[in-house]
Image 1 (cartoon, one colour):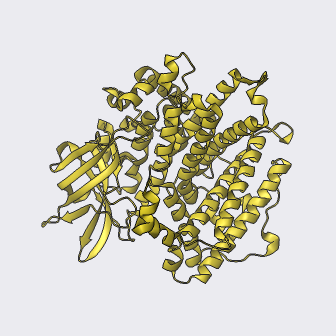
Image 2: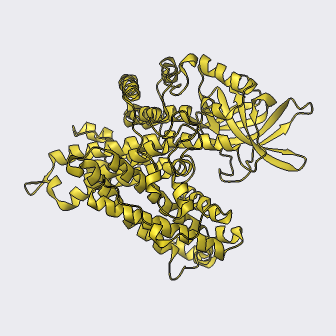
Image 3: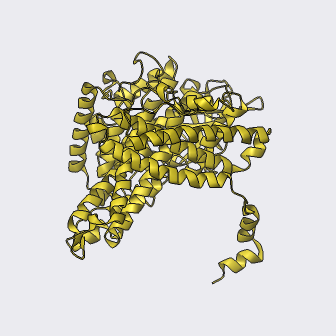
Length: 572
């Protein structure tokens, strides 16, 4: 995908954080919206077509949902065709796809079966092969390359029984007396591919000399004494996705198969950066697939329904529903392309950080909206529709799948808070500017945009400036970070506003890049719809930041959890 100088490790285009730090929208420095070159597009189209045809012949998505399992031999068939090596180099038996082409393949697979798409996404996004860029030359790197060439199923376990958001994992890694290895003790829950992986990465806490560090440990489960699958886990959605609770009871990992870092708490930074792309793959690709399916199902439904002799699609409220879904699909694909544009793991950092929530929450809006449009027909299962000979669009299954994607890869509101804190930190450490001259706040209108979208571009600039100024005021008013971060709702609101701004930026950049008939084509119309809806959502978040009064939620929560008030609330 063309983005900046292909020989650079970072894209030459600026990012959202560049504009945020400057306190104004640096539109001219954003660079062109990434466009696939024809050869790359043909390669992706070919693999998308092959994967789609294979899946349609290899599995029945309704049967997978009913039985909660993928067909026997399915993973082996994926491996034989190279689909578990989407991004691996051809010399290792891989397909060598670009980041966005891999995303396209994952989304195409998920359009037929979400768990099948997630299998591809987990393998490409957080499997051991995806972590190769974080591995220095040496034994670990060569070991993983050998395992890729041999054919492996992989994943990464990061959630302990206590949850995922602790600074230090509950799982421990104890150095052996001779210093040649570490012994892992603990459990991992909700681990994608956990029940089938033969090479598994896990996070664990190492304590040496009273100092704690977090490392990534790569376990060959084929010969790992002390490793076992305690339980296969099932979910409301994504039924059939291999997932499990894993036990590590003194599992020995040679020190050469460990990544440790001294830069601070958390996994080694490069591992964390690579995992951001992984989240886009295994949650964002399926999310886009669901939203696209919703648009297809809406079109099919409207083509056959009338009310009082008029086509259902002729009504204003229905037209607005469909336009919002179409704009959602346009925005989701724009964010995926925008965030995956750079070659280096640090490219478009904030864009990739927020992409997971953009894609999964937008898919949830689309599927919920489509459920309202199709009404009982949407709520009805595909099996029930088939029994009565009706159109068997599996919206009920998509509804369940979409809800799970908002949880996978960390919970949506927690990611919003982390995004907000990331921006606040830039004011605490001096990278962001608090004030800029007023005549520099709004960029020159992009002549490639329609008039309404030029107004959206101006509003984007004003809102970005206001967000930067608000963050500056909050950090100046709270010299102690912990005091500000204790008011989590502030960071959540900031993160949600910023996420909307990232999406609007990607949408407008795409609309400006696409050829338009007389300057106002389909992309411009969809961008206008998306931006209008985004500003409605942003206005809600501003009210959260500047509310004239804040209820005592802690007190109300205590009443709800304990004492006479709790008993009164829960009594029938």
